[in-house]
Length: 433
Ligand SMILES: *Cc1c(COP(=O)(O)O)cnc(C)c1O
Image 1 (cartoon, rainbow, N blue to C red):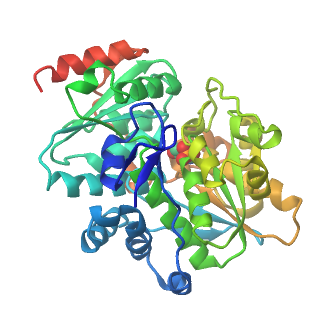
Image 2: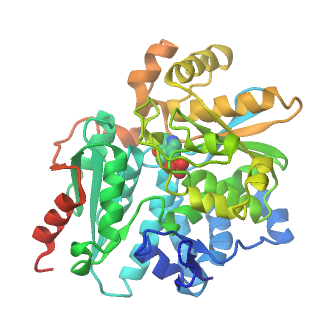
């Protein structure tokens, strides 16, 4: 499988090249040259397959010769060593719970798969790497936890000061070892712009080998398809699938799985008031904006980085997209109301991000009676206990993997927004590297 740059299709590379570069020099996006079709035998066997088995088979079409089958199998077994749980919430909708991994958010899937690939390559090719990542909340924790102690890799995480929860911040700032957290006085978009600039070959890029671990990295995107296969394998074809969108990696993966033959009937792109994509679906115009802070902070993205890929999956054709995808957006009040109502009505506890997906699914199913669907629950509600507990009127048990992050000593590097500050830091740190 070859990957081409969406901005300049003449630039092509294999899986390893696309992963290690992360983002092409012109800030384009690597895209698989085609979306492979899974064969009928795969779909027949799907209901019996584990996530690791699905990953080994579906992933091989993307990693090609770069990772031998047995190595890919090991990467999948190690990366996906926690459960995916599908819970029926009411007669017409089920939750696809992707938050049973070590950082209690769905980003564990992509981050752990990518770290496994890095470990595989770094054991074969002796090159020191700096993995840069901007986070609006959950990405950084998943990357930090997945890459902790991986030989030959330094991880540098940029996060917006005072815009992530205490627990999220502790996940970034208390691990130490090969993980460094940079606290940026600015928004997630500022952090993302700094990372993109560094990767696009700013001055520091010449001296150290920088890679991005944002959801723009293809090695994070591909494994996110696997749980959609798994979910439909477990529950049957024909479902509407509602995905809460931030940078739009997760829903792009769903769209890719769909294009590979998975039996989804319709996709819902659900967002908070950062509504560039629902607006695009409505009007055909894509107008990225600055991000606005909401209670679903991992989705506070004004200019979704994967949007061009998402569009590409549907051949850049607005008509095709709107036939396949519906967009909905919700403000904080509506999200709170959904958390309260869903709990009263069904006993199911939503986190703010899953609540958005659940709202989007409800909105669609209300106008399509007889349809059933799955919404993606991307984070454990206890991660947002300050928001959720007052709404449902009871305490939530923190998952064991997170309890360790309630304390810990914070270590961060404070930085003003702007690429030159990051360049200065990288130059200082890696001057002789
Ligand atoms: C990152 C994140 C999202 C958004 O996912 P994208 O792939 O960026 O669209 C939604 N919910 C949670 C909890 C997240 O961490």
